[in-house]
Image 1 (spheres, rainbow, N blue to C red):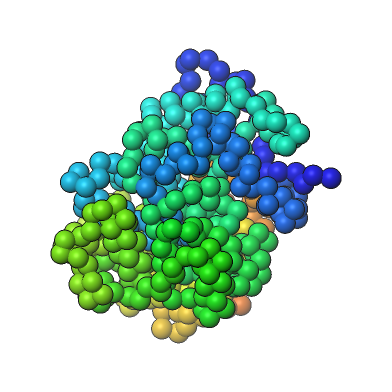
Image 2 (image 1 turned 60 degrees about the vertical axis):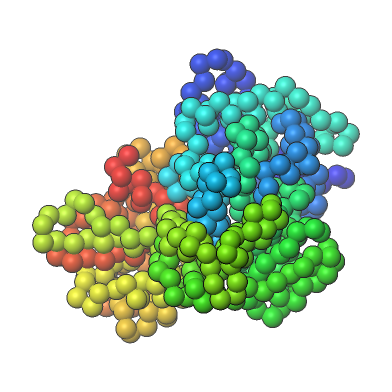
Length: 502
């Protein structure tokens, strides 16, 4: 029996066929493509059977959207994967290349995931998320193309009329359509999960490939060993394009080198660049130095491939002024981000320190970053959630790294639900977790109990929503408060929405 592909049976396919479509209609339609929790569990169990169909199906969806993979070559794509730091690497790479607009490039597209506040963040051009009007226009252009086309039922038996690809695949299709329609001449693509079977991996001729730090994550999809995970990540290497990687654990590096040999790709290990080491980075953390260094290698190769080598050329010891400005001004919200709360009165200080770390490796470096920022005299609070991974392990890692040097006075465990009355912000709706568990705060209560054993001196509190967590912190009677918010990019994104008050 043929393995079932990953798809969504769209309940609203005919709902959005009028000319008066709105941005809200687009978001509702997009959210209907999310895979619900029960279906996701079934898909995870059958992942090994279905994943080999992922690329052929994505190519077919792309055809129905009006493109061939070879059409995307005109976008001049830099393709980046990894477990930790791939988004930051993309941000540094964009910031460097943006220094060459408009002299060298006209439009630079950036495709990343997940989003924090609005889905439009995932598809940006020259540093700006796609405006609502353009997002709506392009969204329904792709929607209608899929709706009005068909696939060979014998070959693609679950891609019939009315069917749409799942959420991430659709957004990848949308990004291709947007960048092609807007005449983007350079694009930076962050892999979603893995690489070999990721929907972005229909890219045929990247200008350069980047691989950030590899660690254990998404084991149900990518495998349980570094070798398995690195094999998947290495799947984005393409013959004819140089690949660059940060220093990896030996097991991961061996797997990457094996894939490079298989694909006849030149793979280069990138060390921390001495200029990067001496520069104050826009994404301000020591651990970002390696991501910035990887970005400099990618940007230099990209410029060289397109016939625009930096002048004077960057070397192993020097960088051009454009490169330096790029890494100094890079910004990646929700990663090593500091916000001073504007609601506090004169003489009071409330500082939010945000990092959406959600793996052992990323929690480790985010915690170290907070440890360097923590003020001895400040009242310190941790706001934490992680709904889909081993949350107790992550919070235990966080506690062990801080040790006795930095301790929290209070710890808040809340869900990722945005508002106490309205529920999720529409663009932050999540269907891939158990609704019952979220409502009953199962994970949060377990975390509070676990934390009490780790640190009986700090006060744990469980709250149903992000809004209530923010209100609780703002209501504390202390003159100097520092809050670390971590464990989930969804948590950080929702908190940014609440801080904005919308």
